[in-house]
Image 1 (cartoon, chains in turn yellow, brown, blue, cyan):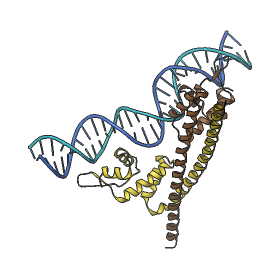
Image 2 (cartoon, protein in one colour):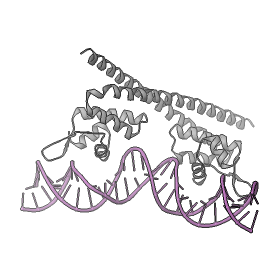
Image 3 (cartoon, chains in turn cyan, yellow, brown, red):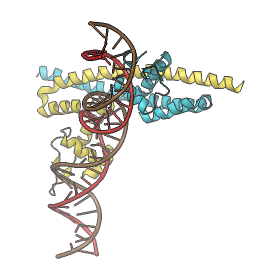
Image 4 (cartoon, helix red, strand yellow):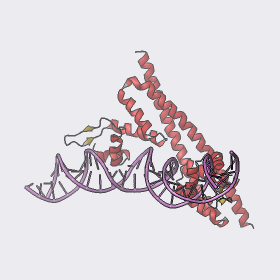
Length: 122
Length: 122
DNA sequence: GCTTGACTTAGAGTTGGCTCTAAGTTGTAA
DNA sequence: TTACAACTTAGAGCCAACTCTAAGTCAAGC
C-alpha cells in the first residue's frame, strides 16, 4: 500500500511516518518503480507495536534501540525480551501510581460534593 | 520557607517553580522583607495537587484554568468539581487502555521466551 | 566596607515529537 | 503534451514544558 493508505490504516500522519523512517524506527521500507514507499502488512504490525511502546511512555530513542536490535536478527531476541520485561515492570508501576492518583482525585471530588451540599443548606 | 527549601520539599526545580508562577499556576506567593519568595504549607499542598493533575496527563493550560477558578473563590467550586470529574473519567479510560497494552506486552514477552526455549533445544 | 552566595528578573535556549514548506519528480487522464 | 495529484527530499518551524543565562539586588560574615 502507498503512504496515504498506510497512514489511514495505522492512524499515523504521513509526516510522522516519514519522520519515523528518518530517525530509524521504520527500516527497510520497500519502494515501487516510481521510488514511492510501498508498505506491507508487516509494516502495519510493526508500527502498531511502536505505537504501543510509545503510548505506554517509552521515549522514541528507546524504541529506536529496540528497532536496531530487531534489525540485527534473532541473536538479539533475548536482549529484546529483557527490554520488554523491564518496560512491563515500569508500566505496572505507572499504572498503580495512576490508580493512586485516581483514588485521591475521587476523594477530592467527594470533598467538593460535601462542600456544595453544605452551601445549599446554609 | 525559601525557594530552595520549597524545591526540596516538593521535588520541583526552582526554575520550574518560578515558571509555574509566571504562567499563573502558583498565585499570590508571599515575599519576605528582601523581596524573596516565601512559601507556606498551603503552597506545598497546592503544588502537590498540580503535580497530581500533571502526572495524570492534564496539560498545564488546563491546570491553569482550574487555578484561575480556584482563585475566584467558592462560587466556582461546582465548576471545579465538574472539571475533576471529567478528568477522573479520562484517567480511568487511560488506565484501562494501559492495562490492555500491558497484557499485550506480556503476551509478546511470552512469545519471546517460547522462541528462546526452541532455540536452545535446536 | 567588601566579598560571597542565594535570591531576583526578562528573556534566550533546549528537548522531544512532530508538522509543515519548498522545490522537484512521476504516472495518469483530457 | 500538458495539466494534475501524489509522491519525493532536506530542512525549517512549531508547541509544550521546562532549563538556563545574564545582569542585578541584598543580607551576613570577615
